[in-house]
Amino acid sequence: MLTTIEKIFLLQDIDLFAGSSTDHLASLAAVAEEQSVRAGQVVFKAGDPADNLYTVVEGRVRLDDGVAGQEVEKSVLGVWSCLAGKPYRNTATALDDCRLLSISAGELLEVLGTEPDLAVALLQQLAAEKA
Image (cartoon, rainbow, N blue to C red):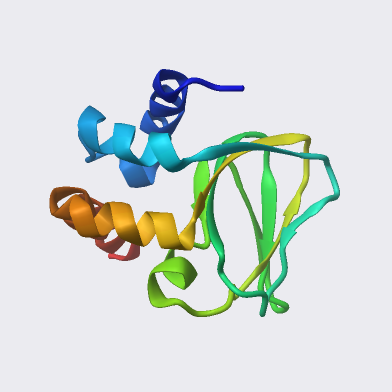
């Protein structure tokens, strides 16, 4: 089981959280749960309720929207769906044995509501990725 400090270090390696302070990452790490996923296991399916945001901290995951797919590693899965309260748009399948950090959508929104600077930093990073 990972400590909060270990989770902070893992989150720091993820591009989405690059602009976040250690204090903000500590807020996320406190509600993040470690999850192991075996190669071939489906993390979530397109159309499932977006109950969790997943951060891939070890291993590779394939995202498939039914038309095209992409491999990701050291990435966040389901962020837009969690923020919008909409179902997942992709199916995520582990390509390797993976280690994920999972944050429930409710806890994510609660942390963002109490940490507005974190919310701004995440939105800026998300906007930069789309630009």
